[in-house]
Length: 318
Ligand SMILES: Cc1ncc(COP(=O)(O)O)c(C=O)c1O
Image 1 (cartoon, rainbow, N blue to C red):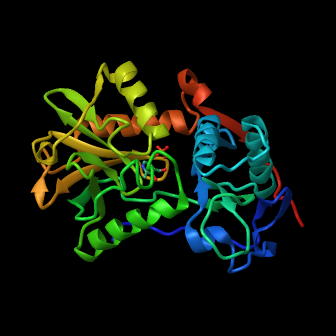
Image 2 (image 1 turned 90 degrees about the vertical axis):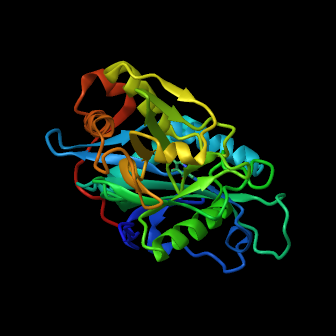
């Protein structure tokens, strides 16, 4: 299996309920509402280590917190912090931990009441923690299967918001795919159109054009998805059409690739035991991978606005 797990260390600095503290000092009750009912909202942000500059490049931080706010709105969570304040807290955590490696930032806002009963009128707590994160999946060609689990529809549990409870749908599909010997699952919507992968958006190359499912296909509107559309147009002259995609269009594609903060740009070489294109990593995916990493790692002036650099100094004791 190609899915990797990245451990969160107890000794790392984190933010919890208004204070900076070590992850190991955070105490949560087993009665925490979100733990029982999935009433949380989260984000995943990457900070790439740039060895040449000695900096961490925090990728699309603002965009992630803007989406976080929208997700919070779905669960009626009032953070009481602006996007700027959330960015500042994140930078502070990263400076304290001072990692010299690719790092993942996980903001999590959750209903923290310790009472029994399902409802949304509860106060929320915000925690932000980090973990080292290299490649979450292999970038050299994934074998995928269309899942028998369908994506949760917008009117059931909206995929547009990054809600902790929705990821049970993801876990069921990933687990089934792994047990059947595949690397990754591809979801269809209830109507049978292609939606997205477990935690990544999907792109197809057909007839010289990029295709991706529209925001109404029960997808998370990925920040990497936007970045890839921008880069494909700007650097490769490739427009992306957002439209409903039938299952067998996957098989008829010249290339398929997945995009996400964790997945980065992950080419797909096989779906449902059928080769995609030549069954090897496609040229467009390979080009986009290279361009994306240059921009994300802060090695391309033209895309400076994508990342926020942090000079990494000494790790803060405490
Ligand atoms: C369900 C789902 N779709 C798509 C994505 C990709 O989104 P992004 O590019 O913003 O990381 C993710 C990852 O966060 C996800 O969990």
